[in-house]
Every structure is written in structure tokens, then in C-alpha cells.
Length: 333
Image (cartoon, helix red, strand yellow):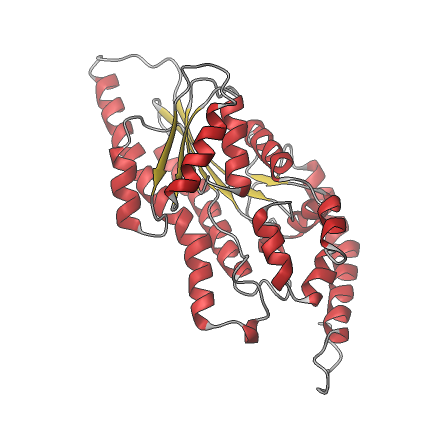
């Protein structure tokens, strides 16, 4: 969907950070945007900011408080919306409070992180797909009965905001990475499943973005509790101000994601390092563009880049072994 003017877009997890930045980018392109998040006051603040960047006074900006990890709440709220969305961006999540090595975090932390990063996208998508299918059935019935004429099918988009953490296992993201892998698995599965529902009246597309580190309030909080090993592997060591100067802002990442969705690619990578990780973890997912770059990069990554990166990361893990314990050399299979 390249032209967003007049389109209705739901953004789940839009009150702060990347979700807010994506919502802002959509509004600047002329879309009607509805924000969903848990905290009403923060949502209203985000709504006020979006009202200031509208390109026309007729654009609608709505803010709806809801617990996105509560399936019943999500279903009730989505069905009560006056307008059917053309697209859904699933942005809710994060790891600011759940960062830490596996043996240092609690079982409750693992559960919370899964709810924050998987169910907050699974539940909204689950409800919306059912709503869309009901609308498709009615549209097909009207079309077959000659009551309406659709020259082009309605495009229905689902955009999952995942993470580069789903493409590589980095110690410290032990709660986060599995949740994001689950979300990526859902995106892959839905991309194929929703092909069943494309018809003369509608066409479905699924996209999955894998942003790396970017500047946000959550990132700053995350840095304070992040293990040193994690910082060294992802190259976020040093003074906080210095680190902040090296990574892109949420607004920059948001623009790259929206542009990637407009191109029609399933996978959207935010930087070169993420492209390398993606090329080695494509599996059955569609390659970007014509597939040439991903194919060549995948060969280079699998034969040269990734073996070197993996050995470097293994060496860092050995180096950061706990004082007083015997650390074995990594076994390379």
C-alpha cells in the first residue's frame, strides 16, 4: 500500500517510542490513525502530537486505551470501532524491564515478556482477521448479487514490528528473543495462510520488520540493566550519551519501516548488520525484492561472515565468565 491518503490504520502499542513514531509517519502521509495502548494519559499526549502533524484537517486521530495482552478487551474494542482499518501495525512490546541473563531472571519475567511481545500482537491480529473475513464474505455476497462493483480489491495489511534479536541469540535477551521468534513464526504462518482469503474483493499482505537498536526512552532504561556481555556483542558499550549518538532515532527507523512496507517486502531490515543476520535466517520466508541480494548475502554470510561473528561472540562469552568459575572453551560443531 503505497498511497496512505485516506486509509484507516490501527497502531497497537502507539503511545511511546517506535509505535508513536510510526503513527506520526502514517499521519504525515495522510492516513486516519487509531492508537491503542494501555495508559490513557500517555495516549492522549500522543494523540495531541499527531493532530499537529496532520496534512488535512479532515484526518481522524483516535486514541483508545486497552490492554493488548487481554484477548477479550481487544476483541470488544476493535469491534466497537466505527471504521474498518486497511492496515494494522503491531508495535507493542520491549524488553526494558526484562533484560538479563537467563539464570538471573525470574520465571514470572519470562511469562511477562512473552505477553508483552507476542500476545500483544497475536490477539489484535486474531480479532482483526476475523472482522476482515466477515467483511469479505459480505462484500463477495454483494458482488455476486450485483449490488456493488469493485474495480480493485481492498488491500488489507498486517505489519509486525519484530526485532533483530529474533535473528540471533544474544545472552541478555533470553526472555525477549524467544518471544520475538514466536512473533516472527506467526508472521510467516499468517503470510501463507491469509492467501486463502484473498479474493476479487480483498487482498491480504503480511510484513515483518526487524529493527536493531534505536533511540527511545525504553532503550535508555534497558541500557541501565543490560549485562556488559550483551553490550559488547551488540556494540552499545561506552557512555550513554556516546551510545545515543551512534544509533538512529525512532523516527528514522519508523520511516524505514513505512517505506519498506510500501515496497511490498515481507521482511524489512533497518541496517546492514540486520540484513546480514536476516540473510542467514531467511528459511522459508520470501526474500526481499527479486531475491538476488538476499541470496548472495546469504551465501557470504553463511560461509564467511556468520562463522566469524559466532566465534567472536563465543569468545566474548568465555571472557565474561563469572569470576571464580571454570569456563570451558566453546565447542564448535
